[in-house]
Image 1 (cartoon, helix red, strand yellow):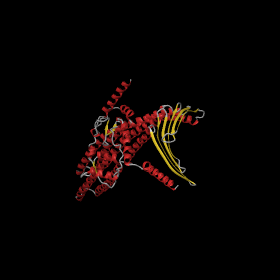
Image 2 (spheres, rainbow, N blue to C red):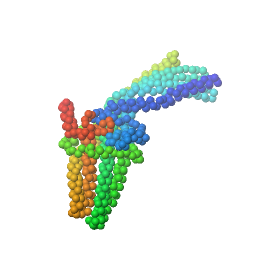
Image 3 (cartoon, rainbow, N blue to C red):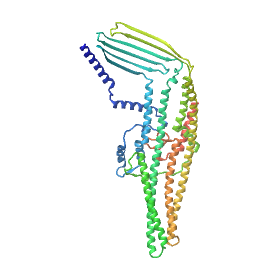
Image 4 (cartoon, rainbow, N blue to C red):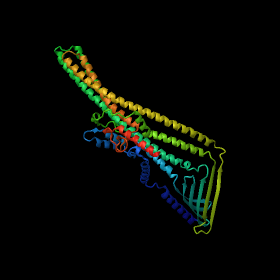
Length: 559
């Protein structure tokens, strides 16, 4: 009895250790991650269409602030200047919202791998080992089952398994038996339509495309956000320089007036007015410097760079802004382009198709259910096959639609959802048309406003020079000179603001019209791959005309 107990304990320990080694070992998690990443990236690559832009910048990175600082130091170099393209690159790599969008895309593709797996042959293997002691009687047993299940597109589910069992009793009996089991479950009515069976997979595939479109729509919004923050900071830097120039001019004017006041050329009141304006100019300069630092900190926060890191901006970018008004295409052309190219609108249209499928799926659930269930089993009491048993069964399962209250309610709700999706699509089309119209008007207005501000700046400059000359001959008062200088400073700031607003208005228009595409480096261009880059001022009219020509050609082919 003791020898038998020792044998049983050893057997169970070996079985348990084997199970731990085979089934409980986590394996190489790094390899698992690499395999999953490769599968997810393959899905993204295959579903990334050309109209979404050039394929890039979607891989997740775990680099944090330290890595961003290291890359920033390399970008700045000896000059300590962060150029605009470099700022866009940093945002693409380290912006927190950008990282989250990449994670959402990855997770959606990861969900698709799980849903796809449900329609593949899924293997399984289970085992059990136990020892029982009951008032002097001892027994040991172990079993192992392995097989697979598979769901077909018509709803058929196939399951097969092979099971082995071993038992050793204190009475001395010892045996190994095996069983082969196979079963088939096939729906004939409800649940037999491939559209219904494959609906989870279809929706998961389409959801991945939707997330890809949303990701690329976000990339366009992101580059506009970087441009906006960068040029707003440059605009504020220009205000600082204008304020410094204004302060120097007023201080020099005050010094000159002091000398002339000593010989009686100016009244004390006029000298006090000049001194007061010098003090105000200094206050303005202090405020403008603070606002510039705040603007740079806002840019740093967006780039995920610590505010304590110091760098300069490329002031030459302001002069590089093109202010030519080449708006010769029509508003209707821009709206037509947006209706075709906007990725968020493509999602809204496809969700209407999703809702239509959901109506079919819900209607299928109302039908009667009739299934064929078949199974077979072959077993042997020992590996030598001394005796065997076979069992075959075939049957029908019927579920009449006598009570389908829940299913009917779900079907009616699916019809309402379909109408809601149609309205959502129509509303988004109207919203996009309004966005494009407003962006178009903003761009035209910004161009006209800039021209006006340039003229105003030229007049303010002439006025100040003329007033200063008249003052030398006592034909203009100190107040006239101070007012002219104040107006000149205001004209300088307004001209720079108009210049920046014209650029940003164009970017927003390109984004809202859907003609903006994002390059692998994060910068933007118009149209498909190979068109001119943003800094080269591409011809939007030519792009829209070419797009409309391609659309007419494709429609003729379809007809």
